[in-house]
Amino acid sequence: MNIRIGKRRKIQFTDKRHPALGIISTLIAVFSFVLMIGLCISSSMEKGNGGIMYGYLGVLNLIMSLTGFIFALRCYRKEDIYLTTPMAGSLLNGVIIVLYMILYFWGAL
Image (cartoon, rainbow, N blue to C red):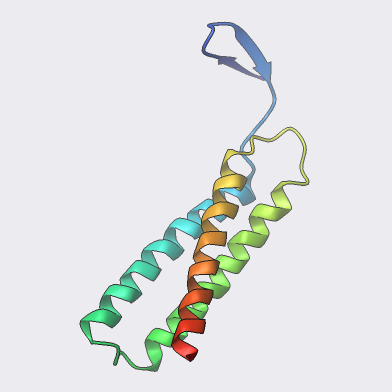
């Protein structure tokens, strides 16, 4: 049982924990975002002629973000957890998925 001291300096006893899948989801989101920025920078340095390897890495990154999003959604079913890490993981992975979809649709036009 953890003792938490809040803003009003009162003691709260809690058994809440950060879920492992929520932490993994947030780490996947951070890694995926860094990889997306790296792919965008290296593709722009080659003026859009980066080859198929950048496309494969982008699709792999999209699948990784989808996996992180699913991990975060699975955490919402659990009880007595802090919602900070699942919420951050689902939000960041969702934004990355939307950005990749915009990028792919824009590239298809």
